[in-house]
Length: 197
Image (tube, rainbow, N blue to C red; front, side):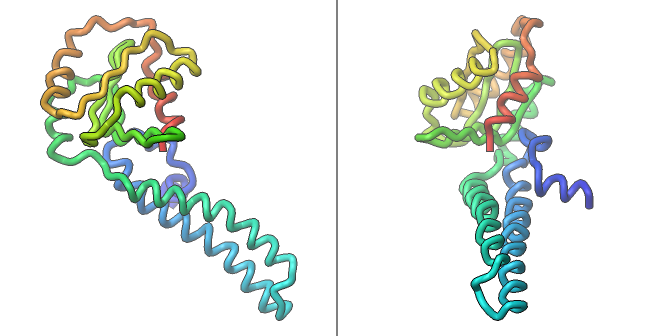
């Protein structure tokens, strides 16, 4: 029960895991229902006890709707996306040789939402795959380079593929890449987790 409650109210530690988007949808819905139930019950309690809508509990209920509405926006965002398909996940598993990986990363900017279904980090090289055939790599690179520089990571190469076969080829090549040991891979992963949905 504790694990479920933790997952409902904080998804940070499961971000980037396989099937994150599909599994998180139900937790987002549960949280939203709870967040709407609390102000509604306060409103009803205030109305039943005073026989009027003009009471302190009505004000508390209205203020309580703010987190509920924020949670509803999160539900809508999750419902728009889906996790990496099983077929593509199997191809990636066959090609990835123990490189640190992240799944289902939804990066949002003021203008666009970029979904990167799978991402690996090999030293100062970040390589990813998106099932979105209209993925705008130029816009994504501008955004992600800014995010990385803000956290102090420079000279990080980022390449996102939309063709699963080319991505699998690149994953095979990355196992021969000489890794710069000075790059904080876990730090880069934490940076990505902190800016995704």
